[in-house]
Image (cartoon, rainbow, N blue to C red; front, side, top):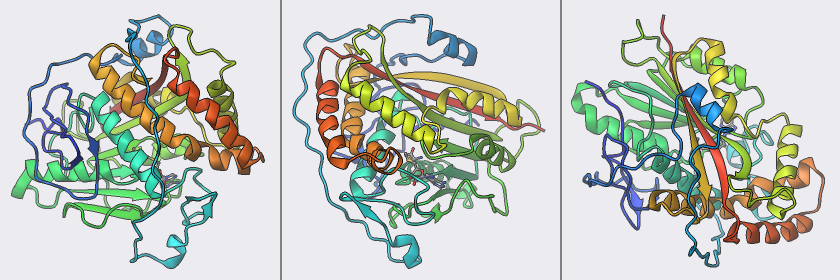
Amino acid sequence: MSQDTDLSTSPPTLGSRISLSDHDETSDSGLTTPRQPLPPSHNEDMPNRDQVVIHPSQEALESQDSGLDHIEVDPNHQYRQYRPDSGYDGEVQTLASSTLAYPVEHGRRFHAYRDGNYIMPNDERESDRLDMIHHLMTLSLGNRLHKAPLDNPRRILDVGTGTGIWAMEMGYQLKHKTGDLYPEAFVLGNDLSPIQPSLVPPNVYFEVDDVESPWAYNEPFDFIHCRYLTTAITDWPKLVSQVYQFVIPARSHTAPNGWAEMMDYDLQLYSEDGSLTNDRPVMVWLDHILTASRMTGRDPCPGPQLEGWMREVGFTNIHHELLKLPVGIWPNDPHLKSIGAWNFLQMLNGLEAFSLRLWTHVLGRQWEQLQRLLVDVRNDFRDPGLHICINMHLVYGQKVV
Ligand SMILES: C[S@@+](CC[C@H](N)C(=O)[O-])C[C@H]1O[C@@H](n2cnc3c(N)ncnc32)[C@H](O)[C@@H]1O
């Protein structure tokens, strides 16, 4: 029986609820939170909407240049003032003190294990942003946690799990779907930062690990998931090779499992209608950030290369989708408007997080100068005349022997 995992047994939402099904369906917006898993919500039939762009690999790549359907602009959209929260919480007390000796810079908290390897903060504000990203990514997949055609996977690994929200939702529905048949089914999430909650589904585990070091698992996994590691990884081919090594192979192309799924950004912002020009502060800021990330040896645009890396190490049955994500509420289509709203929130909440270390450590520039630039960058994001998009690539492939 196919277990094409969706969010129909999704745990928690704050405010509104995610409604889900096995098909590409949409839901009301809800801010997902990993903090307190709750019983599953019921499915609600929602109208089936097309993704912005979903194509097999070659078509997807070609479509970037081929002027596919443009997202239609809502002429009446307006932005309200957005004020991000601040402050920390979430102390974890069971790990080595060195792992928890988080450095704080300009009021933002960073990981301590392998200090300096990752440029983004690990504080509560960043966790909130990651949970928003999770919601917008599952929305963009038609309320699904993955696209690979899984069949009762028992061992799942989430690489660089962040807040662990994907792992928890996956673990929750895995347990729900498999019940007592596969009591050993579990999800493991790893990360440099132990920022995941301790109250989690019983089949979900987290560990502190550097995924760029040699992996030391005793057993391979039925499914490995790897999402949003842009600006984090110095050696992508090595990472993808380790993913391949630790996927349990399928015996044939029609056999279930043996899948890995990778989903990542091309951080280059653009507009389809030419409204975003290179002289805008947001593009000046982005240029600095992309340059600085490359200076650290960490690719800010791994998305378009995922398919090639996966092919190179041996994955077959590869499927590649390009997801064109609007930033802001400017699209006319309600589903895209919802995705754009979440993207707008995470973007504005993340500007300081993306920039802080790259701007001060790598470019050696002043924090105050960054703050002044970010005022103009925020205004660009709020400008109803700018119709900004960003691309996300999803690639899954099978290991067959
Ligand atoms: C942008 S977040 C994405 C989190 C999660 N994958 C998601 O999609 O919600 C990137 C995560 O990767 C983690 N990370 C970065 N470099 C890492 C490494 N070398 N080993 C393990 N985790 C890493 C960071 O700590 C952060 O939590």
